[in-house]
Amino acid sequence: METKDWFTDWFNTPYYHILYNNRNDSDAQLFIKNITSFLKLKDGSHIADLPCGKGRHSIYLNSLGYKVTGGDLSENSINYAKEFENDSLKFEIWDMRDSLENTYDAIFNLFTSFGYFDDDKEDIKILNSIKSGLNKDGVFVFDFLNANKVKVNLVEVETKVIENITFNIKREIKDGFILKHISFSANDKDHFYTERVKYLDLPKMISYFKKVGFMLVEVFGDYNLSTFDENTSDRLILIAK
Image 1 (cartoon, rainbow, N blue to C red):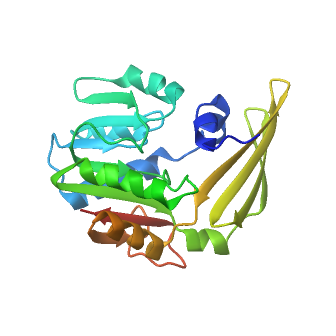
Image 2 (image 1 turned 45 degrees about the horizontal axis):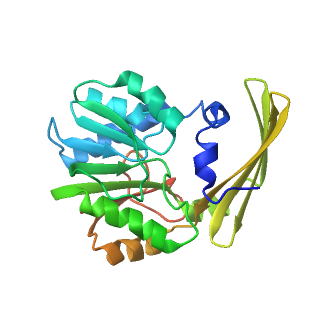
């Protein structure tokens, strides 16, 4: 039986990290370098990375001279990330829907870490928390898939073999969600998880931003900060204040 919050279980398993172990760090670092440079974020600025997973982006941001707090719902991920803590890099278990205790110069929501909930109100709640967690001139960086391009290029069935585990993947777009069904056998057990991310295109995100009083400053379409094109861009990257 799929739990209501699918990500609570899936992100906490070792299999999630096995499936995505080939995620490209150089892409992530290129984006972070480009975006911090574009935003002219001063050395020592306090950035929240939410959710932060195992902390790879937080660690890189910190290496660029920023004070960073990473938050994630997965206890396993945070326990791992905590090994990398220092005076200007901290990690904590953190639900995005909860109001932020501190304020930040920038809050990053990276690599399609949003749109998990059925009810739009939950998404709005997260954006409200983020907005109230920004300093007066603070900036929000939102990095999401380009839903239109995903729809056009949907790979419905795929098989990946990683670390001797065969992951069977099926994708569909249904009821306003992009669904990725993942099934595999490991340790003599059959596993099944479904990732669900809301179909959020630019008009939908603009409507969300208006509801919480965010001002959209810039829209980019990839990690080189190219102009956004709804048909061809790989990403939907929004900068808001």
